[in-house]
Image (tube, rainbow, N blue to C red; front, side):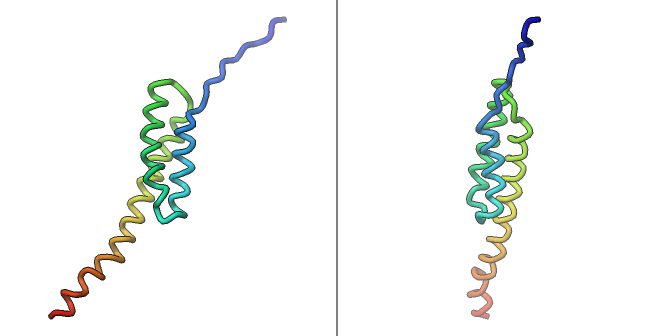
Length: 92
């Protein structure tokens, strides 16, 4: 009996790192969210172009990166806007 040959489709490493960095972005004040988001876009493009596996991981990296960026941006603005508005309030 002849051995059964199975083709193994590689997983996109860019997609994997996208998901990892986007997840780390939640714990690094959003610093890793931007690279994770960008790598997710690159990984999704790579998966579509080459046929590698990892489409779901690339999409997860994009979504988590965008959520992380939006969340930290909101927190940053919530902390900065009152400081910028304070001189106007003090002058009145």
